[in-house]
Amino acid sequence: MKKFVVILLLAVMGYYISAIFFDIGFGNSHLVEGISPVKDAYLEETVNTLSVANTVTSIVVNFRGFDTLGEVTVLFLAVTALGSILYKKRHQAGDRSVLFSASKIVTSGSKLLFPAIVLLGAYVFIHGHLSPGGGFQGGVIIATGFLLMLLAYENFTVGHNALSVIESLAGITFAGVGMWGLIYGGSFLENFLPVGTLNDLFSGGVIPIIYIAVGFKVAAELTGVIYTVLHEKG
Amino acid sequence: MEDTLFKLLDYGIYGTAVLVILVGLYGALVKRSLLKIVISLSVIDSGINLLLVAIGYLKGGTAPIFSPGYLENPKVMVDPIPQALVLTAIVIGFGVTAVALSLVIRLYRHHHTLHIDEIKNLKW
Image (cartoon, rainbow over all chains, first blue to last red; front, top):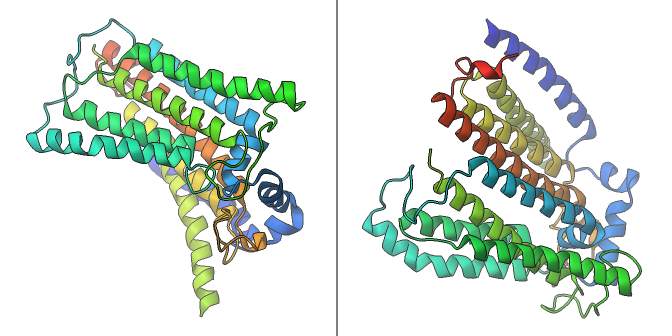
């Protein structure tokens, strides 16, 4: 009975949400061009003033850089909350409650794959301003590498202090670059370095620096989350 | 022919996104296991992200990246703003899911059950 009421309510809701979006239409340009010239402004500014190839990166790090600083803070808060909710006592390495031991294939294969995964993650966040990807994506890729190692080896440990140091240094780098922009350029996160030529690795001023810092920060935070949850013990 | 296909894609994309949101809402409303409720919240997240990215699509548009060969025409690029927004939303969604799951683990340790009818403290 309850299920039918819920399905009925959701059907009505779904009808009205769909009606709104079918009204907007898919893939026509009136939303993009007619109403808001913001898209064109962002695209032009990205190529001409910042010489960054990836517009999404330039929006995330430059135009909405302050927003990204807040986002990174939210991630940090989430990790801190997770640690404080699950905290009981420091366990010895290999002292886990949820996992079974991995087979020979997993242990050998993950040892082979781990450097390649970390390399791919580093590539993704270093080239964040040139190709799809960026700090968040690269950080997640690196954290999956650590997840693989933690699943494969029972005595694989990640230093909690090292994670904290990396995370704090990356956060300080982000905020410090922003403050430097405030001193030299006049506003927070202002671009104070030469922008270089489009599609070069060293282009875009402070954007690659900030995204590399974000990559380190996200990698350290997600590895911390995985480590905390795996070593949680009731 | 092409127009019909595109129309189909149109209904398909928005329909799928709304359907994913509704499936998530259904799970959050009907399921009684805390773990399933958290999974449902994350499914709602995915649906909303799909919807936002679909709004920014431009017919025949390319990715908003100025690679060599795509330098000259920013007019045919899809809207990068929803993509940047969704990047933020994914990260926030991850944080919410992580904290919710840790609370679920804590509740399980305390009550030895995940069924919300049996956890009396959750009722008001």
